Image 1 (cartoon, rainbow over the protein chains, first blue to last red):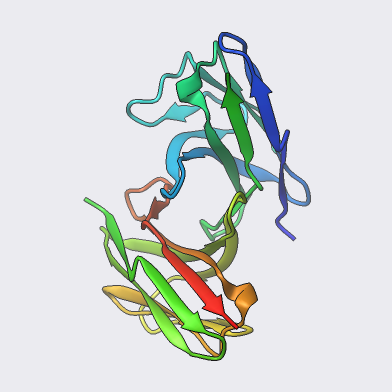
Image 2: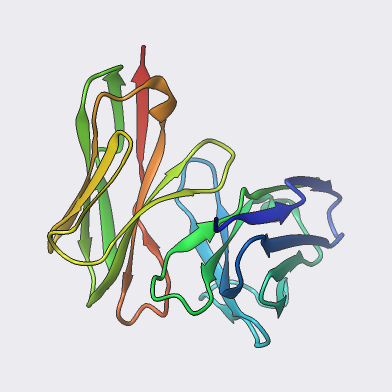
Amino acid sequence: GAVVSQHPSWVICKSGTSVKIECRSLDFQATTMFWYRQFPKQSLMLMATSNEGSKATYEQGVEKDKFLINHASLTLSTLTVTSAHPEDSSFYICSATLAGGYTDTQYFGPGTRLTVL
Amino acid sequence: EDQVTQSPEALRLQEGESSSLNCSYTVSGLRGLFWYRQDPGKGPEFLFTLYSAGEEKEKERLKATLTKKESFLHITAPKPEDSATYLCAVVGSGGYNKLIFGAGTRLAVHP
């Protein structure tokens, strides 16, 4: 149980284009989803928190116009990297928490490797 | 400020050589402490959630314990497939479900 998927698993794009990453909770409903990025040999850095049907809350220093997050349903959140540049190349990981559950346990997706040329 | 420190940064073990990983934390009102395992190029895999001092949880060769200041992840008779980075994270009462991660411990188990 508590499986989270991401699509695509990797993507290569040209500088200036936009890329959309999907995060789905497959066997549970998620009230809250989180988006992280991770650089090589570093820990996860929280980018934003999204709740179904409401605007995402971005961490300090994260450009909300560049990283668009939509949480349209209890099982789907999307991250769109707009006008991507090489410095946006990173490993993006989403996570989700169970709706109505006491625990704050986050279940993570497998990650998406973004390379911007 | 909520903070998590993991030690050692890296650990090399022989197969069967038991050891412990440490996670020290400072947080305002601990709501939960979490252990994850992360393999290279993959997302973290959930292992344990601990809520209060004295709590212990086990799964196969892993056992997690919690005190008021730290948590230990004990690995008994490890196998090469236990090689991974182990991440510790906490959520505090003012954290709005935000995980505060430590830097992780890179574990390598050699046959």
